Image 1 (cartoon, rainbow, N blue to C red):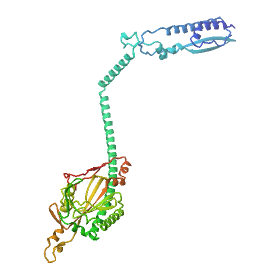
Image 2: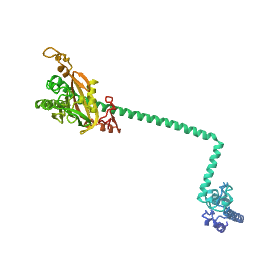
Image 3: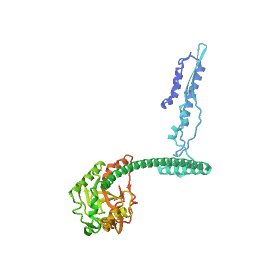
Image 4: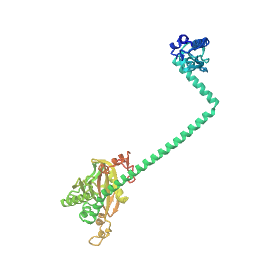
Length: 453
């Protein structure tokens, strides 16, 4: 039996280069195996061939492939080699064969292109020669990338135009569907907002209609008091026809010039004023109009006689609306008695010392045929009695006209009570409140405001 430890150590020394490269040293198994001289030579030859093969691989892998920084990656198909250390042991007429196989790490590293590429960039034949031996700047890389992208896209466009047209068709379809959806959503939102605005506006308008009706009811009550109470029957007769009791001609009053009658001794009767004050106070409280309707006036023979401001009864200024050139009062008298205005005659809003104000007028007619009163005591026609039953309204004789009553409404207070701003703010909307003045001549001068916000 021959000791093989010496040959194993020699093979180990020949493979010492593997240790320095971090490789696994092939190991001899079954040291101390007996054998003849042929076995020793076989083992020695195998180990020597192993060492030579390993170092040849190291030298081949270590060669440089060029110095240019522009390299194209190539695939190296190298089969994995194996280093086999074989030792034949023969003892007592039997033989044992043991082998240890280790992967050739050099060939494995050669196959892993990313490792070598970082160390040895491969040459790219498409790179111009002037850039082959120097590093490219960032601007150059960006410019070349943009050029390559443009060239690639242009090539695709001309080679496959169907891609462009298909993309445009899909884009147009998507845009069309999107615009249709957006338009539908917009129309739905607009319709919803319009419905909400119409509902709130109708509700607010209903409130104003109700409040105006309440504000006008006292005028009808005053008219009925004139007809049936008997408190005011004598006023028209005592004031008489123009120019009876004329005090001033073309006196200056707010808004123009007016003729003024002397109503002292007629309209300042304390008993008459007390009845007037009680009547106005009653109708105002019944309709809950205190603070909103702030003034009432009575004009027998269309001459202002009785006034009530803030609950205080007093004598009025005696302006004759039927025989004055004042633009506003002339318009009121003409509408009420010559044009025979039906219902309430409303004007405003206009600016008064109280602020935004509406004024409302209601004509009073005797509603009876007074021709029997035109006969005098002797049975003849009395011109005095007949003329007393008429009012001269700007040159037109109007029969059975007694006069009119009017009141003033605080428009700002009505809007405040309506909570109009709160109604619209609850639905995130603004509003504009308008009145179409179909009942007033737009050419007529006078203090009025067509819009109120």
